[in-house]
Amino acid sequence: MKEFVYKIKDEVGIHARPAGLLVKAATGFGADIKLFKGEKSADAKKIFSVMGLGAKKDDEIRITVEGDDEEAVADAMQKFFEENL
Image 1 (tube, rainbow, N blue to C red):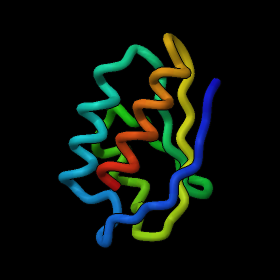
Image 2 (image 1 turned 180 degrees about the vertical axis):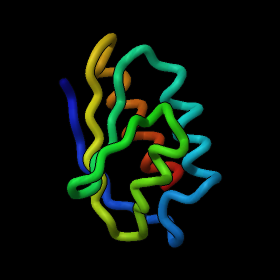
Image 3 (image 1 turned 90 degrees about the vertical axis):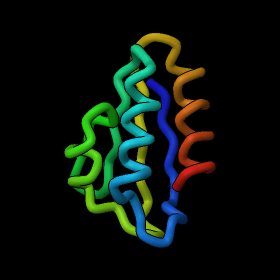
Image 4 (image 1 turned 135 degrees about the vertical axis):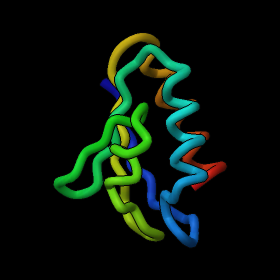
């Protein structure tokens, strides 16, 4: 399992547009991708799950990747977060 922590920089947090982009990116991978904010967790491949985290600017999100090619998937997800959130 690979994991990293990301601090949300987007002014409005993970709202509908970036959540949709995140789900689209995550769905392209076979690995299991989870997001954690405090006690809440979300499946990165389900938009309502991602939006249910209620992640706002300056919140820290922990992302875990487990499964096929997890190193490459974690790197791709980290790049996605840096470019979009």
